[in-house]
Image 1 (cartoon, rainbow, N blue to C red):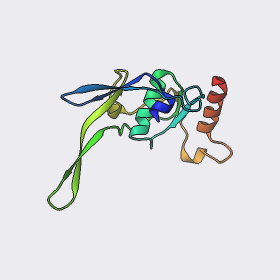
Image 2 (cartoon, rainbow, N blue to C red):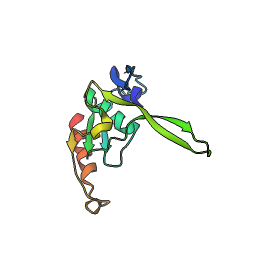
Image 3 (cartoon, rainbow, N blue to C red):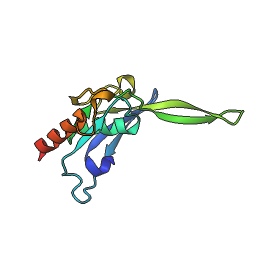
Image 4 (spheres, rainbow, N blue to C red):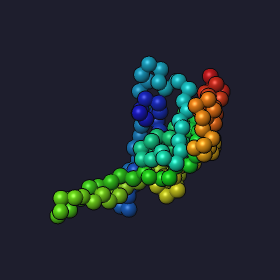
Length: 139
């Protein structure tokens, strides 16, 4: 997904002993690099979608709208247990453009829109309304 919408973005994958930059080389498939882009995030956005949103925002490629995420972004290693189960241990995390680790405090969108569940109706969704306004401004 990153390569479809971003070009020349750098993501740092780091651990206690290593920091390795990953460079995204974009692919412009059917104009994917030029379309207006809005990414919606919220408290239940976690993992790689958080990383995607952070990369979009840090490169200025699109607008990220919503509420803060919880920072559930890490690389996990699985280790088998004697009883047949397994334990997952975080071994690395991610940064975009040298910013703070996403796993520490989550991701903060450029345009914050807080909406409680009871404020979202099929005909009135404040996050979607802001997304439409942002897309219209990008055209």
